Image (tube, rainbow, N blue to C red):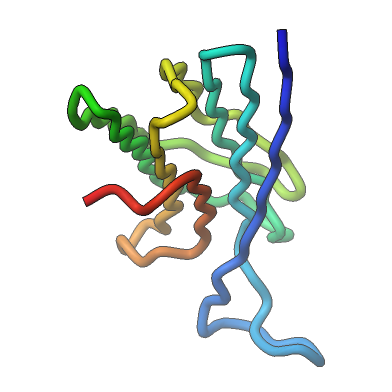
Length: 128
């Protein structure tokens, strides 16, 4: 049994406040990928970096390509976060064999529909 955790995080800066490095982000999107043998578990979460409560919407997309074909899973929903709060948004389990390729994308949108944070991960060639 092989367990390989992989955690990636990325921020998308809104045109709002600024810091010495540039605009301050609204939140941080995070994907956690854990593989047990032939099962990949994908967990998406979001952490607020604001000092006030806010509402968001998310979309989690998992695309898997194998010799047998292509499969896709999409989940989404709305959520709210208080200052500094983190929320677990979704969890998806996908069968992945050694020759399979996968791509995962987590997008966080503000109330106006603008992407304010994202995270992604891939293994193998990008799915078509």
